Structure formats: structure tokens, C-alpha cells
Image 1 (tube, rainbow, N blue to C red):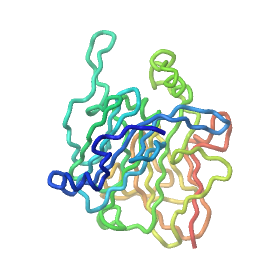
Image 2 (spheres, helix red, strand yellow):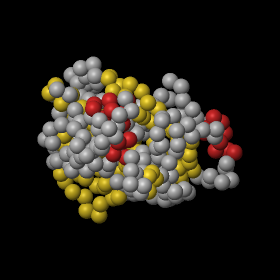
Image 3 (cartoon, rainbow, N blue to C red):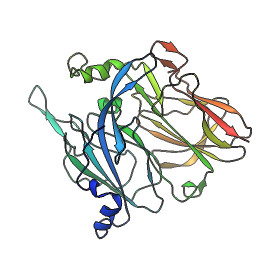
Length: 324
């Protein structure tokens, strides 16, 4: 896959960091690009996706996990837009966004100027800088802030995480292993309308979107799914739960309570024990669990989005396994 990179990115992260050491002190740099690709779903259904890629890697859905070191207090993301529409980047809940440009606007049919994005936009074929100071610890969902209802559906989202210290998600909150579960969905009709450049005509908005496929970490459940390791007996496991769906999801770890400790990187004063975790759209939850038995588990959506198109027994399932 061919894509463009910002001129700064071509020098590489190391060289660029050295060149700007005087101006970007203690900044961690990520070079993202946005591209389109085709994804094949169960049943042979093909859809056009938009996704983010890191450096020279191909774009994926979800985008790459951006892991910020505990020692870093500032992040800079250089975003190259290889799509045909303006896009942008937001990280809800993250501290210190540097607003260095006006948000995107458009003129509607009644000649009114209206907002299209939350922040400055990156135009097709261009690149922009997005910067955050005073970066906080926790789990965050980054996504396009331009026409977010549509562009998140198309795949412009990913996870960003930062621990307060080695082995501590927040100060004084330790864990031994972690499981990241990013929930998302696909409305095939919307993706087809975008592919045919008919969004706004055949489908006029996302208000009545009806997704047919539901994904965990970018994939719908199918038979033979490889389980994710969820720690070992007696060891604290951190669940990083992220929701890129258009609606609330309710993940359940079958037969177990989770200790919910934070949302959108904001630590609770009083954690709460929940069997079914309410996870609204475009939000994140951090939760802890200490398994007492080596076993195979299933995490699923209590709202029963458990289909792959017309086929049952798919969707928002994820197999997990606990080691002795």
C-alpha cells in the first residue's frame, strides 16, 4: 500500500527528535497516516474501511495502540491524510491539547456556516501536527474529530494508553497483566454509500444507522477464535475497555465481577464492583480483576450484539484464558 508521510516523518523519529531537542523537550512523537482499504467480513462481505497506520505500517482498524511512556509529559502526533475528505484527531479526556488552529466549518444549503470538526482539520493530501501537554495516565480512545459519527464508523479510531509508573496504571494502582478490548461495529450500507460517493443522498445521516457486524479489536467473533491471555491465578489483571460503537455497550466477563476504577483516564474516588459494565459510546473504562481459578472465559456484550450479519453466534464475543 502506498501512502504519503509528512516531510518531518521521513527523517525518522530519532533524527527528528534530535533536530528539535531544543523545542520538543520530553515529547513522544507518533507519525500516523490515514488510508482506505477493503476488509472481508464473515460470509464474504467486503466493505471499504478507513484506518490509521503508524510510520510505514499499513492502516488497520482499529488503528495502532499508541503507548506513551510514563516518563513522557507531552505527545505530538503528525497526521498525514491520504483520504479524499478532511479529517482530524481528538483524544477525549486527555490533558493539555494545544489548540493552534480553527475548527473546520462548512456552509449548508441555507448559506449558514456550521461546524464540521472539533479541532483544526488535515486536508486531503496534507499533514498536520496535533500536540498534547501535561499528558495524563489511563486508557483513551483517539479518533477523528471531523464528522465523527461517520468517520469513526468508517474506522478512524484507536487506543492510547499511558501508565503512571511501571506496572501502575494510576498512582498506587498496580497490575500484573492487561487485556485491551476495543469494541466497534460496521453498518454495511453506510460503508457502501461512502464507497460509491453516495453518502448524503442514499443515506443522509447516521441517525438511523443499523450495524450488522460487531467487532472486538477489529474482528468479529468466529469459531476457532484464539483466546487472549488474561493473566494468572492470584495476579491482578487490568481490563482496558474502549467503545468505538455508535451506542452504549455492556461488556460482561461471564460469571465474574470487575472492579471499575476509572473512565476516560479519570480515576474514581470510590471504585465499584460490577458484573455488567456500562460503556457509553466513545468512552473508555479501566477495571481490575484477580482470577482465583485457571479457566477459559468468555467476555460478551450483555446487549446481545452477538451476530455476524445474518448469522448468530458472532459479534461482540472474546475468548480469554487464565494461566495457573
